[in-house]
Amino acid sequence: MDPQNIRNLNVRNIKPTGSQFRSILAFLGAIILVTVLWNLWFTVEPEEVGLVLRFGKYVREAPPGLNFKLPDPIETVIKVPVQRQLKEEFGFRTAAAGVRTQYSPKNYNNEALMLTGDLNVAVVEWTAQYRIRDPYKFLFKVKDPRSTFRDMNEAVMREVVGNRTVNDILTIGRQSVADEVKRELQRLCNQYEMGIAVEQIVLQDVNPPDPVKPSFNEVNQAQQEKEKMINNALAEYNRIIPKAKGQALQTIQEAEGYAADRVNRAQGDAIFFEKVLKAYKKAPEVTRQRLYLETMDIIFPKIQQKTVIDERLKNVIPLMPLGKKVSP
Image (cartoon, one colour):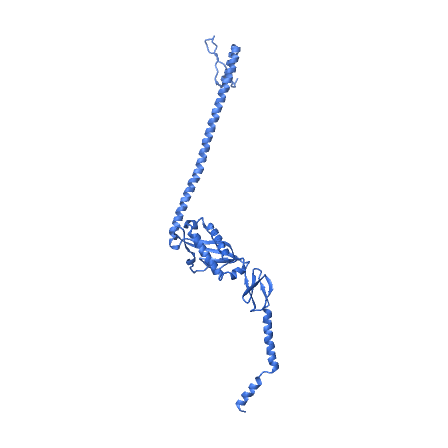
């Protein structure tokens, strides 16, 4: 048989019949139907909301869970994580977060290098933590919200740092800087209707530039030594001065007590002398005798050896020692 006839016969044999053509159409229709049905529903995660667009125009918001829509391209869905805390890093990048966080070795000094109010330079690294409060504003009010938010962060941080001294930023003023940046950044987000709630600004690290870091550390060390010496002097002052004041007060109180005791004793002796004088005037001989006996009663116990002399005798009369035990 001629080869040309064989080729024509093969072509006629592969032409589809009517039933085969209907099968192909049914198969294609089934694929289209499955695709349409698959695009009629979608799932929104618990921390997300879905924004449904009809021909590119916002029509409604889909809550978390199973939702339905018209098939693509009539309606499309954009899912926005409204319950998730998002974070932007400035001056550094986290390469791998975990138990031991790894940071990107790339240099980001163009973000972190800033001029302070006293014309010094500081390297400020910080993070901005935020949430999407209004997904509609976040997607449609600003063309590129993430880039805009980063630019606003840098602008506000440079403004705040530029109004403070380098020592304030590096030491006691870090928290106040973060608070001021948060307030100003939230004000700008509200003004531009970005739909963002700024939750926290964290100054990750604030240092002087590497070329001047040794000199800066020496200055800090000198200031710390100064503060240490002042604190030691104040401690010594607080240890000695209160003790000296206490001793002085004790001496004064003892002197006042002694003076009061002497005055009271003198007044008592004067009153006693007046009473004795009155008694003496009433009975001079009796009073004289009583005073003599009372005086001797006080004096005699203090005398170790006692000798009694009779004025009528010319010799001394030896007596046994009074107040002592005498062996027989």
